[in-house]
Each structure stands twice: as C-alpha cells, then as structure tokens.
Amino acid sequence: MTPTNLDDVLRTYREHGHRHYGEDVTELQHALQCATFAQEAGEPPVVVAAALLDDYGHLCHQLGEDIATHGVDARHEHIGYQKLKPLFTDDIVDACRLHVAAKRYLCWKEPAYLDGLSDASRTSLHLQGGPMNADEAREFESEPHFDLAVRVRRYDDMGKVPEMATPDLDSFVPLLQTFVRSAA
Image (tube, rainbow, N blue to C red; front, side, top):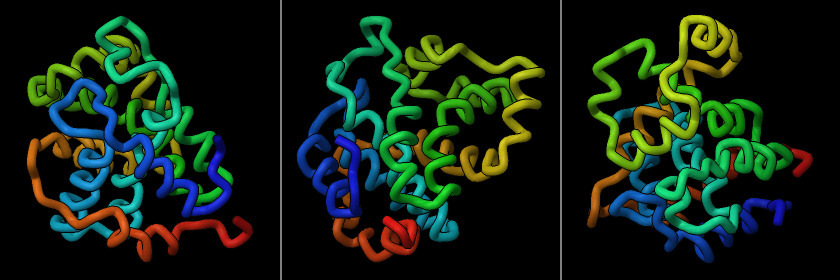
C-alpha cells in the first residue's frame, strides 16, 4: 500500500515495525534509534526525519525478515522512495533513496568504514554492489542530496543497539509533519 498521509506511514511502522532484518533490533527500534542519535548529535530536523524514514522500504516488502542471508536484495531504498515520494519533500525521499549508495560510497571514500559495518550490513553491501568505484562515486557526488544521505547513513549504522531507550514514534510526528508535502 502506498501511504496517502502521515497516518498511513505511522500505521505501517506500528503494524510491521516488529520485523527484524538481520540485526538485533526491530525495524521500529532501528528507526527510532537512528532519529534519536541524529537528534542528540544536534543535527538539523531534515537529518533527524530522514534518519527515521530511511529504511521505510523494509516495512513494505513481503519477502521476509532474513532475505539478505538468502542472497536477495529487496532494493528497499527504492521501495521506500517510491512509497514516500508523493508524501514527503524531495530532500527526505532522496536521503531514503540514496542511503544504500551512501554506504557503498563511504566504503570507497573511507576504507576503514567497511571495518565498522555490522555483519548484516556487510552481507547486504555485497548484494548491493560492494564498495563504489571512482566513477560511481563521482556520479553519487553529483546527486543534489548526496551529503544528506551520507549523514543519514552514519546514523543508520549506529541504530543497532539492543534495548536502547528512545522516544516513541509519536514524539517524532510534529517533526515529520514539517516535511509532508503541502498537496499530500
């Protein structure tokens, strides 16, 4: 289902946020942790909102929770982008679309970055094309919101802490509302 309003997005988190994706946290825990880390770091609202929504596509596919271990890339970044594009501003949805590319980019740009990835992120990295090459990196850097995607990616990597206390989903609603397209 494509969300038609923010309530639909929140409902998707509530109904499917219990899923895991190879980490020791659920999708909802992961989203809340990413946003919380960004907020605590003093990031601007756009980074916090994008960090909350970047993995929305994982909640939308019906391929199971452990698909990467079976060699399947659901391309969740594209699913999330397509689902959220009519509803949220371009910077938010571009960060969602580009956060996987940002992982590949950081592995190219900062070779030590790869060492800090979780096992699940390394598995998915392989399925997503591995580290970028120089040509791919230049193309990625030409994306209007590539720098936002890189910042969001770093919080995505952090949001994997079992039992971490975070604000609840409803506490982020006012923030998310500021990025809903006015026509939505």
